[in-house]
Length: 122
Image (cartoon, rainbow, N blue to C red; front, side, top):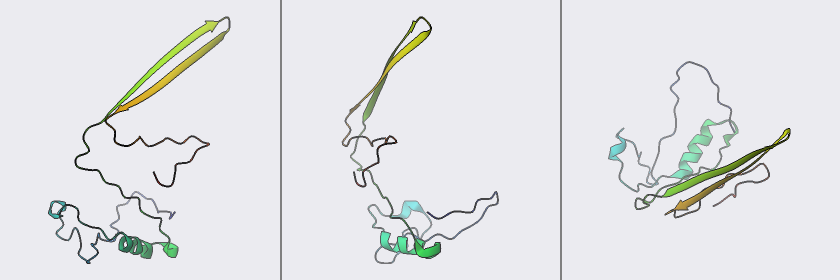
C-alpha cells in the first residue's frame, strides 16, 4: 500500500493512460463515447506504468470485473422477525434475519466475519 498525501488544495496529477495491446490510447479523443465496445486494455502495461510512479515500484494486482449485457434484473428479498420478553428484571430477545434471491446467476458476495476471510478467487 502506498500512502497518499492529503491536503485541501487541488492538484493535477499525471496518471497512466489506458492503452490497447497495440499501443493506442483508448481515450485518445477525450470522449468516452468514442471508445469501441469490447476494447481490449493492456493491463500489464498499465500496472507497469503505475509501478513507475510508486516508491519501490510496488503495485497490487488489479481486480477487473464486467457485466454481461444480457444479465437481466434480479431480486433480493430480506425479512426480519423478532421477539422480546421481559421476565422479572430480565429482558430476553431473539431475532432472525433472512434473505432470498431470485434470478441471480451467481451467489451474492459473502460478508466475512472476524474469523473468516474472503476466498482469493470466487
